[in-house]
Amino acid sequence: MMKTILFSLSLFSVAIFVSLFISRNSYALEENVIPDSYIVVFKDSIASPAEVANQMAKEHGLTLAYTYGHALKGFSATVPAARLNALRKDPRVLFISQDRVVNISGQANGKGKPTPTPPPHPPQKTPTGISRIGLTTNTGVGIGVAVIDTGIDLDHPDLIGNIAGNVSCVPRKSTGDDDNGHGSHVAGTIAATNNNIGVIGVAPQAKLYAVKVLDARGSGTWSSVICGIDWVTRNATAYNIKVANMSLGGGGSSDNNCGNTNSDALHKAICASADAGVTYVVAAGNEQDNAANHVPAAYNDAVITVSALADSNGLPGGGGPATSYGPDDTFATFSNFGSVVDLGAPGVSIYSTWKNGSYNTISGTSMASPHVAGAAALYLASHPGSMWPAIRDGLVSVGEPLGLGHTDPSGFHPERVVFAGSL
Figure 1: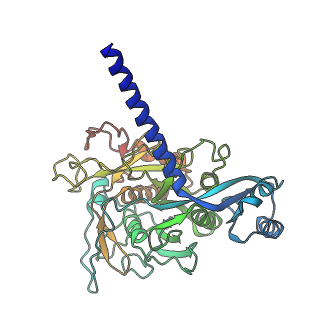
Figure 2: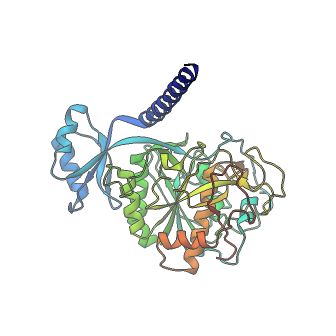
C-alpha cells in the first residue's frame, strides 16, 4: 500500500513539473507576442506588392509599418481584432503571422563596460577567438557580409575601411549607426581591418553592411528583422552580399517547411533570401535550452546555427585557465544545444570593436556566430558561387571534432568547432 502511495505521489509530482514546464514555455512565447501587430504575407503571384499593400491598407483601414517585396511579399501593420478575419479572407493573402519581439543573443554576462579608447588607439592584437579558429592568408576579399543587428559604428577606425553600406529598419533612426554596441562587436569579429590598431577580424578584407533592425536596448520585432532581410535580398546581387549574421532571437520553432505550414513570416523570408544566394549564420541562444525552441536558430532548413565554446587562451587542448562559463575548451554553460546546431565557435570573453570607437569584452552565442560568418566569407572567397548548404557542409567537414582540441562534459554538444585555418 505504501509503495502504491509513493508511486502515485511521484507521478503527481512529475505531472505538476511537466505542467509547469509547458505553462512557463507557453507563457514565454505569449510574452513575445505584440498585441494587434501582424505581418501579412501575400501569395507569390502578387506582381506589385507595394501597390497591393497600399490598396489593402485603404480597404481595411490600416496604417502600414513596413512593406516587403523581395524576401517576401507583404506588409506589417497594427490590425484591430475586429478587422483580422476579413484580412485573413482577402484572396491576395497567403497567411498572417503575429508579430513578435526579438532581442540580441549575446552579452550572457550582462552588457559589459566598454573601455574608452580615444586616439591613439591600442596596438593591434589577435583576439583569442580568432587565434582559436585559425588565421589564414585568405582574407575574404570583396565578400559582402550583412550584420543584421543594432547597426555598426560607422566611424570606428577599425571598421570604417570595410563598411560598404548601411540602412536602418528602426523607427526614427535614419542610418545603420550603432547606438548599442552589440552590432559593432559582431562586425569586428567578422571583418575588423588588419591596420595595426585594435583587433583583426576573421575575414579582414570582407565588406560590411550595417543593417540596423534592433534599437539601443538591443530589442526589435519580427517585422523589423524582416525589413532588414528584405533589404539584404534586394541588394544581394548589386552589393555582392553573400553572408548575413543574425545574433538575435526569440521564442519559436520550425515547421521544416520555410514557415508555409505554421504561417511563420520570418522563416519564409529567410528561406527566400537563402534561395537568392545569401548564407545566414545565426546564434543558437543563451538559455541553456534546446535551440529548436528558439528562432531563427531552429530554422535548420535555412540557416547555419552556432553554439558557444569557452576558450581562454586561444589554443586547442584545454590548457588554459577555467572561464566563468566552464573549463577551457568546453562548451559554454549558457549555450543552447541540440540537433539544429551545426557548429561551435568561441563565445566567452571575446574582445572586439564597440560603439563610439571603443572596444569591449563580452560573452554569448552572439559572439560565436560571427566567427562562423567570417569563416563563411572565407569559404566563399575560395569557393565562389557556393550556396548555403555547401558552405555549411564544407565548414563542418574541416571543423574540429569532439576530443581533438575540445571536450564536452555536458554531453549536449556533438557539433564540431569551426576551423578557418584551411579555408
